[in-house]
Image (cartoon, rainbow, N blue to C red; front, side):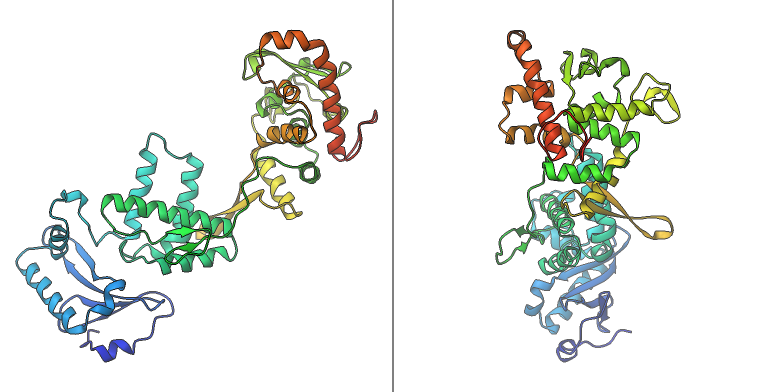
Length: 442
């Protein structure tokens, strides 16, 4: 119920435990003191706009200006706003025009915009850009907005959000998931940079840096995203893959360095197991040139296991339920294997994504931080770190070298490349190359 607010009464107000609390003054209709749980205070005016014909709550004294406004000044200013309303003038619009007379109507500062309004406009903006984010990135932004940002700040005016508010949320999220806390911080910062361009706000409350600095939020330290796995990490991943056809497809990719599509669409006719060779036709390679892949002892062991359970299909890995077509994905298996490998002690492979499921219960999905294609980089990087020639690695990967180079060194490259694939298979098996082929990855 409205009451006569005084400086003494205001000074004795304690911050609420949860949601913001409004204390309405009895002298001016709609005038209220907003107190937030972090004890930041601001003055708002609730009114019905005579020009836009809807209800508004306008923050005309923000928290960073609160101390400079005694109650008598606030009452006088609020009474002036009420007089403008009686004359058919929206005081918020009038204040925006006074602050920026040259601005176009759509570009004026509008203190009524909430963080929720800003989030909707920002999402539309990033979805309509020619260089828009990937759909998965936009979905992740929506997840962070719906589960982290909007529940806390959605109803808050965009101009009211402070650095301390964002810092508090960053620390709250970072206690469990520091990487996600940093991503959330980046999202809020990007939204507010966009809002500054719209002239909705003047300052970005999510300014951040990795080194402590006054006026900035300190981000959690992050290791650079790993784009390839070491031999030790690949061995741990192998143990978590299981024994399904999809797992064997991933193992074949690990051991050969080819592209995932080349593995999944492989036919039995392409393989010469006696000659330890896989001949991928040009129509299935990225370069359009046939790719001859030497097979290590460990890769042949994988092939033998797949052949033992061979189904009536021309494909090594036929589609479940339709053997006339190749399997088109191992995404679910890949994410599960990464998750289990991370639980086994290899960090930085997956991160949690929180979404609302049925009956509004929170559901956790796992986002891979290492792509299947990064196994190809792992193949090349581990060989390079063991002093293998970059020319040999390029040939193994099927990169398109000059034609005369291929012709001149073809008879030498075959033997060298087979020795190298045996070396890599042996590295993953944790021993020197031998004629026996079994090991941790086999």
